[in-house]
Length: 351
Image (cartoon, rainbow, N blue to C red; front, side, top):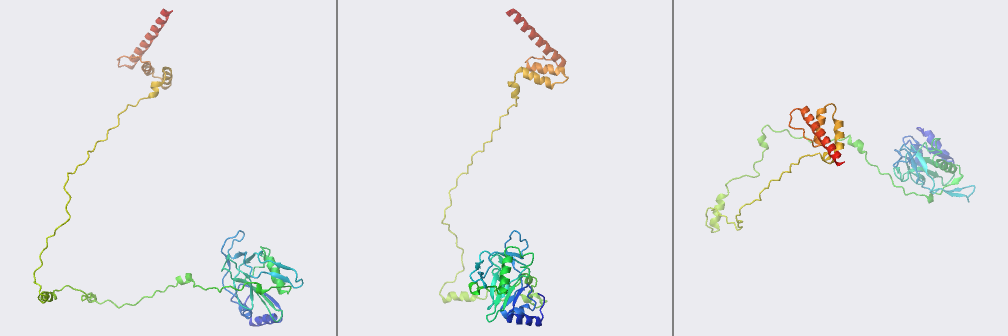
């Protein structure tokens, strides 16, 4: 709805009063539409209805899925077939896209509310009016997109659309006495965000400071003088108390001192050092002679004299006291050859 002219408002009111049916879907409270709806106790409020809980498939918060927003039980009675009745109060869920709330007063009655998951909570979003003397009917919904092509087939919007327009076509009736009417008035709260940006503190004007700051000091509140000493001395004569200067009282301590004792301390014994153990290669001690000779052959490359000396140390053959390595090697070879010869001689004698 755009802005209605005064003549259009009069035409609409006359049409409804003569028995016509009107359906209004609008979210604009600033048009003259509220002036027309005021004759029937309905008003479109400012603001938006949003869903406080996320639901899959409805990403925008203004696309509110309301599952418990049926106010009227919708025990719909078919005027042409009065015995056919269908109770849909507990099974209808609808999508309320880009909508606002309504203010509903008697003689109008609420059809749908924002439910418990919409915000504002449990506020009217669809209302109806029916003439008591005549056949005029009116339905007002605070969303212009609820029956649009995008939302008509979502959830049970098409079922609600059929109920609303069958009501306007006098094919069904709705008993408002079976529904709720205990909606609380919306409580307006101040816009804290806007007020916080408009803080105007009160600054009190003060008088300028004097040139002589000593005038600001107050020295008559307390002081130290000897003006009352003559009155105190004269009070001794009045009370017949001898006046004597105060003497120093020697203190007496009743708490005895503890006896003196020699301070003894246990001697500090030095921590013994750990024994100096020689690192030995135990593997060389427990490995057989052949394995040790094979490992030695793998280590030594071209230094034959060194190889012979190490092999003599493994075989426990002394290389003599020569300084030259080659002489030591010759001595080892000589000792090994001597041992082989003696071994062969013993083997021949045993035969």
